[in-house]
Image (cartoon, rainbow, N blue to C red; front, side, top):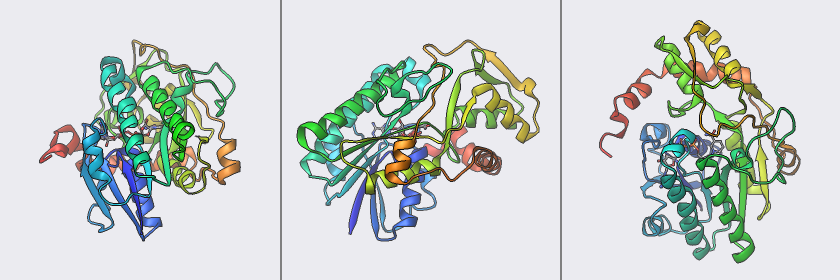
Length: 329
Ligand SMILES: NC(=O)c1ccc[n+]([C@@H]2O[C@H](COP(=O)([O-])OP(=O)(O)OC[C@H]3O[C@@H](n4cnc5c(N)ncnc54)[C@H](O)[C@@H]3O)[C@@H](O)[C@H]2O)c1
């Protein structure tokens, strides 16, 4: 039996990853270590929470003691998603981001080292590379130049992960993905904000002039890449993940409004985010060449199905808006 520890599995990407892995590998066992912060939604695990191969341990990676509970049974590999992930929140509470993303990752690396895990995939972001001008792409060799407390805390965790490979020989693999979208993304993020506000005919805030460019990838394509990195990635290596789907925030918002048949007049330009990065764009050729990965979902197709999912998921949204999703926790 192979037992994987996944952290952050109540969140957006982590819950998709667990769903994907349990379906693809019926003999796999998954332990999900998640503190159930505001971003951790037990409703996200509905499709697999009763699977006997799955177990959720409520634990906070800021506590070494709570991490130890997840290692009571043999753990063969770790896939580390748990993080504070919202840039705006990092601007108001940078200390929490340092605690969870940097110290939490250090605690997890240390426990993984003590247990000689065979693979440790550290899930990171293209935001660690900072901002691009109007051309060029981030490669794995691009210097780390984070601009927000979120990106800086992720860069700090990447460097600790790297050091555990070089110092202790822990088989660490780092993945850096571009912006994800898809079902079950917490409503405060850009695409769900556009959809959920448009559905209620509410104004949709667009930072600055809306010309900031992001490189979008469907969450399932990200999960497939993380699985490949786990199984075939070389320890000590970094893999960039992205689908060459660049779009400005304004174009994206207009595109989604068109899908919903709503007027562009719902868009409202607001004061720009502090330190707002101009453009992200990933060069994924190493991941494509070495891991045989390529995205399977075109942006138009993925946005269409994502919009439909939010339209049909009133109850999921209602439980978040009312706070009921955290009830009983
Ligand atoms: N969303 C994106 O576009 C994107 C892109 C690239 C990389 N990433 C990375 O992927 C990972 C997952 O992102 P997401 O969008 O699913 O985030 P999310 O905010 O939806 O989920 C984060 C999960 O981590 C859990 N968590 C937070 N703090 C914790 C703690 N102290 N202890 C234990 N669990 C804790 C939360 O409860 C939640 O379930 C993050 O590491 C993020 O940096 C995200």
